Image 1 (cartoon, rainbow, N blue to C red):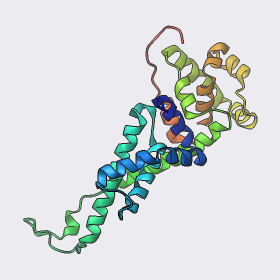
Image 2 (image 1 turned 120 degrees about the vertical axis):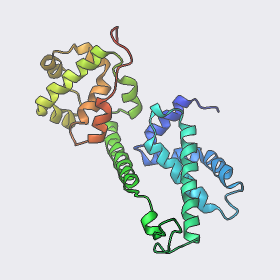
Image 3 (image 1 turned 90 degrees about the vertical axis):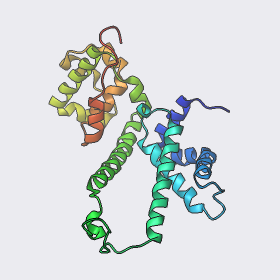
Image 4 (image 1 turned 90 degrees about the horizontal axis):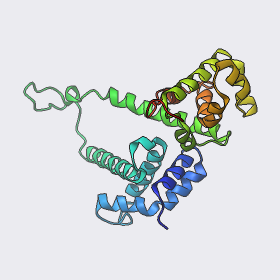
Length: 245
């Protein structure tokens, strides 16, 4: 059966926070993972290339954790992740097969040791640490959202599209942050304190009801120090100005 990209995205977002869903997704797309591996190594993984297949599977899972709808269709995104991870693996293997002392002269004009010619990769390390922290935070936040029956896909679909609606949601957030007992009640009861937030923020209750899932997500982001998630949600821009939501 041909699956639409929308259904794949739904599975991917579920797999971000549910290990069973992730295992099922990997199993479902094992043929795709194997195919991408074969494209790279030009032979069957069973011919002494089992490591490459394992690396491709891990790359697929990493793609699941880091994927966002704004990055386009998922399968091309996963294919690039697999290829990049296999390229990294082969580069590492090549380095290990040709081990050279870092104090060996580099052969450049100044005849510096190789150690002094190696570029500073601290930015790459910082970027990796940020990606790792982001993935961990996404998993934790996704698990908390699931407790409210909300997925990341739900939040994305429920984001305000109009400037005035976004401003209304910000007023709700500002009021909740000024009254942290409302945030505590949200976590404790699993329900949005709609009446208090509507009256306190001066926001129309119907507007809040239409964007309940988004409001729950953005309020939860301010309850447990989800700084990375918080930044993403707060930077969401409206698609157009004015008009109905």
